[in-house]
Length: 337
Image (tube, rainbow, N blue to C red; front, side):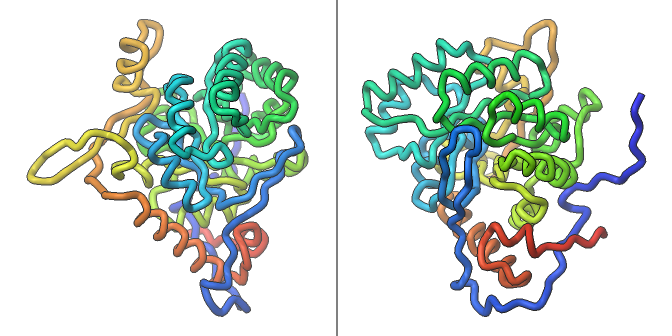
């Protein structure tokens, strides 16, 4: 048995310390960031905020809104290839919208990517491989096969929360690693299984490891308020993934639920009973739900929230003399509460 007495931290456990700054105005901050994908040799430029690939978050409608702000969307893996073709014809930009897979066979992935190219004459730029437990052997093998089949395609894979997990996926051919287990707002994995890792420490530990590969992490989970986004970048994240913060907007496409004279929209975890019933006909006998469903009051168009996020990031930068998002990590010091 391994036991660590080192205290691990969540976003709520720390604050970023202000420092002398030459950034006199939020207008002076540049948020578009260039991120290198080392295994594929490509690069991406934009605001490295990513919508989670959840049913009521990672929608095509959300992607159309996010791309206007140069933000990314890990599109839900449950859209079929014809839905992709239709959305691309309606203006969906593949530079900012990433296609998501789970444990599919490489032949199936190739068929979908080829079909989209054939029908739209547009290439998928980046794929996200997303499963709850990125440590299983089969997952690493799929990443290795995908890298051999698609040498120039950006690959983000997860989820893991330790240096070992980062090495498993980067050695398999990933460009970046999605980090987070048990920290999501509608995730019950920690309560159900006892498995997890405080999100801030996971981001710090994994970002230190991924830098050895010149790669990046996507911090996935635990972001409850805009300040948590800044803390995730301060911890070394390349991208920050948002779920509950983007939920219940018009672009989530979740139906309005009227309750107590107010409008709500549903958000549920992708390992919840709701998700498994919708996509697989129910919870299999050999497993249990590891997610929950909540009602979030309707927030209207997402553009208002996106503007708030961008404004908050610019303000963070002025407090710590950071000209851009990349310098948030370089210029940040945490104080533990």
